[in-house]
Image (cartoon, rainbow, N blue to C red; front, side, top):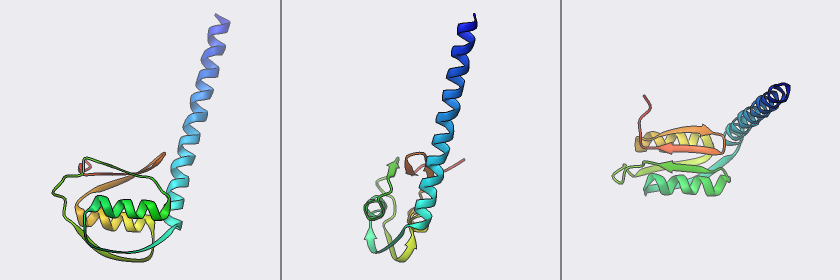
Length: 113
């Protein structure tokens, strides 16, 4: 019985540690996305391709899910703006949503409830 209790405590401590690491990763990604600047010219480009360019230039993983094939193309001139601002602009122009997650930034065609 004592062994089971100790195992439970060890597992709980491990889960708490993993949760705190995950939160730190998300905060670090958000900080990097706010501090990293990009400059690029986007003319009539599919939103997913524009996001690929931002990802490639910044080194931040941008995962795309459920982006409709008929999403509007975007045109924007990004000069020395933060990656987060660039993603905000691109997703707004294309009618998409984004979320900072533990291992990057998720962009989706699904609307938030």
